[in-house]
Image 1: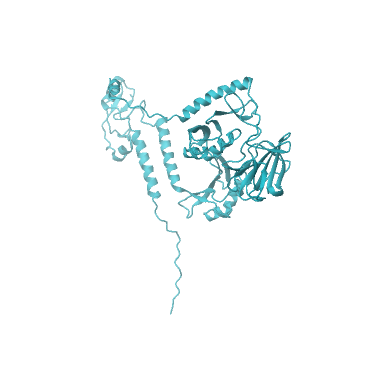
Image 2 (image 1 turned 90 degrees about the vertical axis):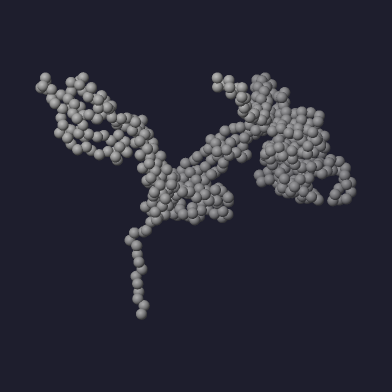
Length: 526
């Protein structure tokens, strides 16, 4: 026969003794003992001194152990543990017969009120500070955090619930977050930190907040208050600006050699774009040329570099036939351009090469057509580049055509000023937002390299038209930009001197501290 046995139930859940249950009380006791030991510098007055003072003041001295007051005093924690009260004694000092009035009584071995052993304000503040640190250290032992990454298809609600946050509390936290940040902006790989507090009286840790890093500088913090509601705070790390400088020789290409020297790719591309107004990087750069560049870098207090922030403030290309230094200058109207040392703007109406890192695969003029197989006038320049390479607007202007056009494939035409136009053909795609009638700025991306239309491979076909007639982009002469004058020129000259000095500092290695010689050591000792 089988007997049914009721399952055992526990009225009280068995808890395991953790390290924190031993460490925190031990730290507290050790700190309190140390504080009292630190404050035990004062000692009791000597009995002979008290007796002498009493005689001079005509007072009666009572021996230690009189029942009027206790005959011992605790000066610190250890004294209190070791001290034992003495047995009461009936030894009293004789009263003077000269005066009938009672005289003050002085207890031997007892500190006088003029020199109390009480804790002063400084010592009290020291004790309070120690207790606060102990409590904070104990609280930190109970706080935990989880750093999780957003996966593909994840929502913030899924992420919080999956990592231990109650659904109703996750709803409240997300509602507070929406006041300053849209949770839909989270992308796969984005990191979220979830905070919990372990209460020894509860089985599971409590969800108390989260933090989302918006970027390397800004973050959003959600904290749970004592009333159970969630509060949102936006935090930003402090950022400081530093100048980084590089200089080197060009043996292969500007990109390859500057990259090998440690210049960031973004700075190299900006440098190429800066000189694309007046330098043909395919034919004018030769071995033995040199470059210099100084740019801004923004760094947080923890050493993180803020990406995509900072500009080139100085650059120089030394070619075989000329040297071209350029300085970044902002005028009184807020316009920013690059100028040579004389105050002449480097900006020209059109860029010579509206694409980065490309090679000229076909020049302007008659050639044997690669598709048709007979000689035909080639009315532009072809730049061979990988599919998807960005194409820039050669100058400021208005879009006249955008989209498929005849044998050109995907095609863009820009009107820059009266009688001057540029055209870009065989694009993989026209950039979104580039449409007929829209305005573009010089250097703005308008499309991407492809091989649409009558084409044998990915490249950009680039044309310059003057009064509707194609001209050779390699030989066309463009007027320069504006020139600074008056107060603007004077201000710019001051900036040039400062930039030259800053570049020398940025590129000069920091010297190691000098080591004192034996003779110097002897002279200092004397």
